[in-house]
Length: 155
Length: 452
Image 1 (cartoon, each protein chain N blue to C red):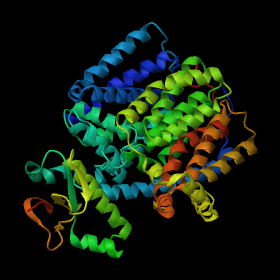
Image 2 (image 1 turned 45 degrees about the horizontal axis):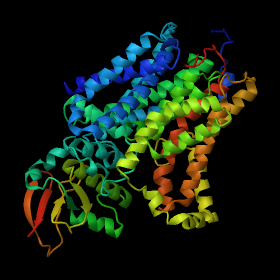
Image 3 (image 1 turned 180 degrees about the vertical axis):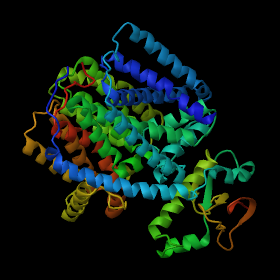
Image 4 (image 1 turned 90 degrees about the vertical axis):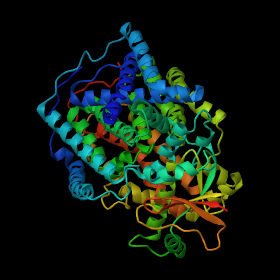
């Protein structure tokens, strides 16, 4: 069922046209921004899981592992100050993302923040930051991978 | 090879979806916008079916997952045999103007460019994708016969439905191993389908140019495209919702249409917890049409059954409900005027300007609504050829539900508003754009929707 209808009048669509022009402007800005980001190196490596490959032979097949990150990162987060250009909120997001990606890399084992578990994994998302356990920790270093990835086991 | 297999993995869902469209009596659309919508609708239905198929295989025996491609091809062949004796669509497909083709091409190129740029920047998806959806898929893939680790308390949101994780897992079974391409492809398919279905639904009511205008609004909303590229479940839910509403808002809703809408609503439930509420609200709106309600419920059964099996087999508490502190605590938060003021202000901000967190936000629903009303009043356009009330009420009720949830949330209110509100509004954004363009754009041609 098809009917011919009057041609569209530009005036009729003026208000929507204004908003459409706004969209077009945003689209142009987005194009510039997207191109800029496309030319940049991605901050999170696509082969993130490979970082943890050296740890896997040492780990039990299942269980809950502890997770720590670089002390200066935790200190910056705890103090509420920024860290290398990141706001505390952004830093928290980076830390969370790091934890999530580590959990993916080490699944089906589970990760929890802290160093109370028998096995503790350390990593930070994209910097060459070296994670460390608090002084006096009863854990010893068992294995390490690239990009500051570490694995400790309780003595 | 990985890319080719990932691409190939979309053939059975499209085949299954097209068969389901035919089985439920849908008619083909005309023009390039209509074809985009047909393909989108077939993708939505087909991806939903193969997601449930994957879940069934996982439950039956994890080692059977390798046979997922054969199971899907079997389902597709079975449906195709059924369709042969029933209805044929794609018979009434007509040509398109060069302008429509070029506009469609430009829009797809634009969305594709933004999508690829985001995948390049964040190949694992955003933090919700890495922490919830893709993480669940990894656990399902690596857990062996015991799926419990995928639903353990240490996994974030173990109660969330599994449409997206199951699709990622079946993508890996096609590719022969874990691949970053599978979640990217799933995200891209839903984004493509969402824009196409909304555009085609508008085109069916008001002609292809109005449809393309709707597509341009969606493609030109950065927060929407970003969310679609984030590998999360928000745009899949939005796509399923707009597809279901477009089916139910058509002038004639036959039995097959109601079943199809029900199937889509059931898949909403299988996508996100919010989908369960969405489906309930849409069904509630049809309480006075018992025949449609009954057939919609029949259609929703596969999605609802999958959800029920997940809840029974892997019971996990919802974090918001668990931390609510009981009805009394929730009620006391609800009675705090300050919380209402904060949430209402948050809604107003986001309804005026879509996302203040992005440097590239766009006008939200309110300016578009005003523009639509002005356009209708100035030109006296004809009554919309769709049941606009169904869509408007569904959107309104869903937003009201989100408002109440945010008022009573046990989380820090500012944090919850900042992280959730734009995302929640996105669930209704394609449906809103569909309703707006279908009711306020000038009428070009009248081609009834997928419904006969």
